[in-house]
Length: 159
Image 1 (tube, rainbow, N blue to C red):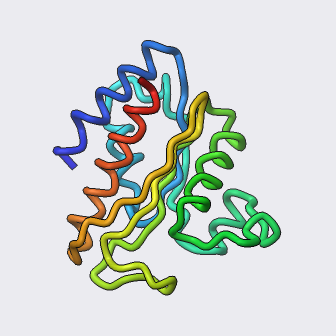
Image 2: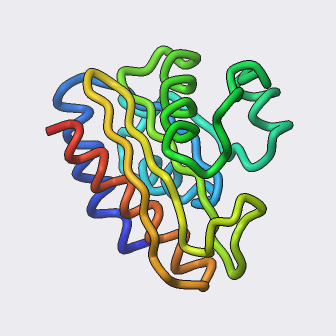
């Protein structure tokens, strides 16, 4: 996680300076995004909360996303990442919502995505969505890469 801290600190500093808040949803990053943001002193000024939404049951129970809202959307896709980011932002009343969804490895997911596939989204005054394919099977390396990519996407969105 040490490699993630400089990027998390830079985002935290930007959020604090702007008096803005963030809420986070992650799946294959397993909490690394939230952990890095919370490792920065003063996190209570900008971090409202979030969760590791790893299953359909968690998605429904913790975010209230219904099957109707999922119509035409599959997990581990850009539209799904954006839905997660928008939903957590709205539910927690945050200025920004960050989301990650993918396949950390060592194998792919049931949707046909290879290990190292993730979709990332940032929702706020501007929205950004991207897909990352690391080409790696290593679970831990992918989790770190997913978190780092989310921080890069968020930095670009925050300007």
